Length: 68
Image 1: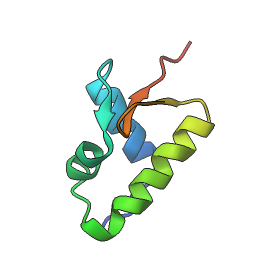
Image 2: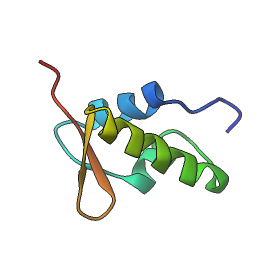
Image 3: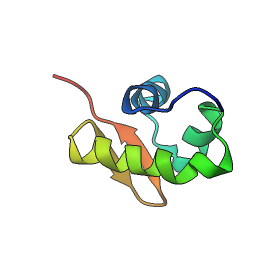
């Protein structure tokens, strides 16, 4: 994928699928990211968790946190 993947794009995928938790690989697929970008997407997901915008679930699944 030539487009830059950022936190906003990853968060948009999580919010689109809410309230369902989304597997890391599904986020990669939805963003049309290549294998080389899988680690980048996982890093961004972990950043979203640390910012309180997402919650990590078992099995490398992530869910957007409801905004108040």
